[in-house]
Image 1: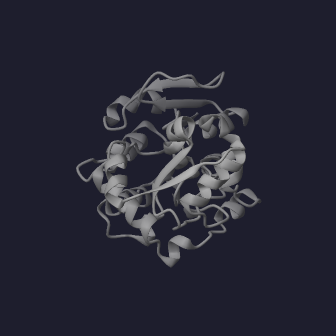
Image 2: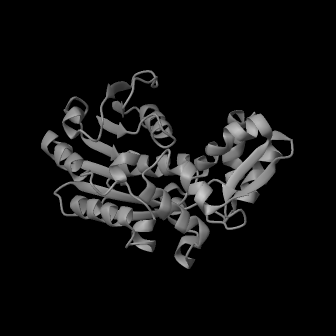
Length: 279
């Protein structure tokens, strides 16, 4: 059995589906009751309380670990989840980390994630670590304003990074969960092109067939909005990357193609699959 945490999110949902279609027994974990694919077991649990994971982890051979936003705060202890998995008999973990662990190692949330990576590396478990950059699905933050006003509001409108389609992350995670080939490997995951928010808005407009106005937010405005969905420290770190990416953060990684045997999907492809969210 394979356990998928964050199973109702932008990575967990396609990962759960891919594993089920591969004939695996899957347990989908989320904080709230949710609809999952036929044949998939669903367990409600809170990762902030590792003991609540026991029913999901019992009998599992592998775990995809995606931390909820509150577990990125400095006072959380996500290493308890790894220990709980080990105690339950899980033998393999694929951890969703972040590119910033290597490119911005001294940010508070990056230090905490590096410590979690080290706990996993130093355990007796088989492991694969995924370090994606920005997600194409972050554009869903704009869906309401696009539907209502045909407006995208974002900071740093002309500063781009090679954002990745979460489905590509899910497919790489599935490879790590299903085979021994990726054990002991850390992958940096990016999309195939550097693309700025204004260009993302243009891609959504092309998909919709209607113009979209771009409004450039100040950093303070963006932080205020982002802090409603994530710890302020994580919002601050994210904005630093988006506003002034380093050469390493602008690098297009070969790792998606290395694992999947194909190039990563473009933002335009992501927008095409998710156009209904913006209509």
